[in-house]
Image (cartoon, rainbow, N blue to C red; front, top):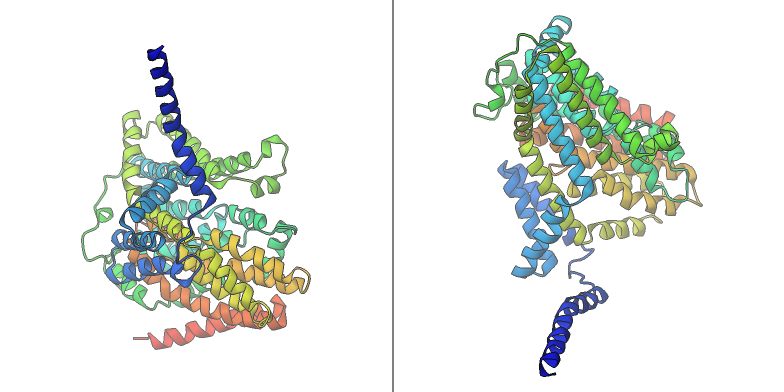
Length: 533
């Protein structure tokens, strides 16, 4: 009997210990922790610290980590234990266990492996020789890069890595700096996707417009997306007018002397590679075509196309992360099979490309992981709530100036957080609520201003995943890419801001768009005269 009582007591004690964490968890859930700096300007300080340090020190990893550390300290109220717990549990562990992020990392690694396969098969070198015969000038090489970037409008990640792998041999042959290549890739990634009706970006924007026909609004907003359109005009004008300014000018001058990287040290990518004599142009073109086809099929598959949904609807409902990962792995398997059939590479060589591709993408993966963690810190401090409140308070008094104000706010928010999609999610519902029952045309212009500002901030932010992808695609030093393209982005941003002021009053794309284009071309003429040697 005594033994039985002891067993019962032990059982009750064990049950109590088992339920204790649940009780504590429930108590914590009832009183959810809110940091003292929540939804204040301090929420934007961590990314600002990281960006400023990266631009000053040229060290990306340490700068991002310091930004993350500042965010953790602000969240925990400068508690040592709270800071460590928040950074690792709610930061690194959380972002690396997120399904969407893992899909992007898988896609990135597979793209790296495919680039390694195409290089080892000799496809990239063969395409370079072919392009050398067809493309005779530096301007032609840059225009071809822009044209390919515009054609690959499905997704910005896919755009960055594909255009980079295809055009590197061509631009290298014509002594175009890697910084200039990275700018051309970056400027034809998000800016093209945001004005393409069939893209992962169109799907994202359509989903944020609640209570309205999101896809129809996206189509109507395209003519007012001044930043995206003027960025394309800017690239073509820079190439045809042969204008370069800011840090990019010295990078281009160094490239003409044979230094494509301007890093001050011998770059691994500059080392001469052994070219496979069996390689032909089709060894690059077929994998790229298969990659495009498989990724499109993968995206519409995740959107329910094979379950009866329409093509456009399936794109709107697609999961870009899963679709791109599925498409890229299928394309890689098909590429290996074709190379084996053509006897361009042995099976052992093909397998050797997998770790090589992974190693090539390690810097991009590290920067992405740090950037996602920094965004998690910013989100936990309520940056989105702070910006949303600021926009709503200013909505009533500056109605005609609101598109320009929204553009600037979206720029700053996307630049600070490194995410354009997050910026859409914060600002577009606010814009719809402000204008839904008052001025539908101004609502369209303001939604477009939100999209344009988000793309602008994302375009120049060192912690943006698209910017990181562009650096990886061009194999360019990340800080070099950010610092060289920043003056170009600022010029287009200022012109776009002025154009949105005009659009707020004229409320017509036929008036405001020509004004913006003329201002941009005049600005470039002035800059060219100022930088004339």
